[in-house]
Length: 213
Image (cartoon, rainbow, N blue to C red; front, side):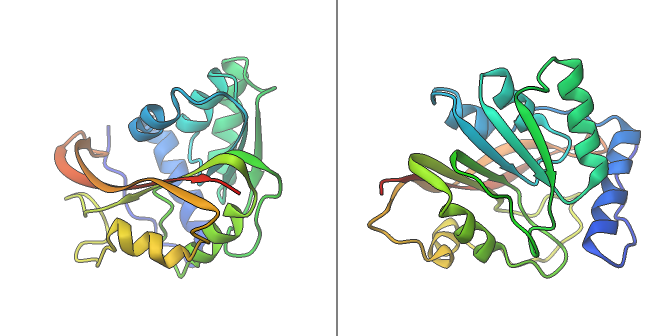
């Protein structure tokens, strides 16, 4: 597999379109994020929102388990791959794709699960505001699951970046503590595989919250 190069683009949409075209050309394996599988595997299926869905590994996994999924990304190239794979797996009736630049528009609905895996950007991005606004759409009893890069992998573009701790990220959301129960707020280490096939130990920051009211 060839290495995925950083696109030279002027806007977030151009950047992510180019990146997802590279991923498609390289035939990067599409699979569920392991923390989502471990966290949501025992949840009863409902309505799920997959933010920054990429090429659909998480969305397809949820749909296979009976969830009705709204898959959101800024890149049409990514959403096209999600729709193609959903059709191949006969899951089109369980996945709806929506294109959003989340800095400017948000999906609307009510959700039993909002999943934000590695929702980072190299551009200015009001992530805390986005997650706070979308948390208001979570049904009582539903979950907000945030998984962030807690370290910089050797193949990452943002070497030297300052990364907040899980507690700092949670505090930045400024959620009403009377309406949310913290299930997990921790850093976890794992072995990751990069786009060139190399491996390294990395850290994931995991925040899982249950809405109580």
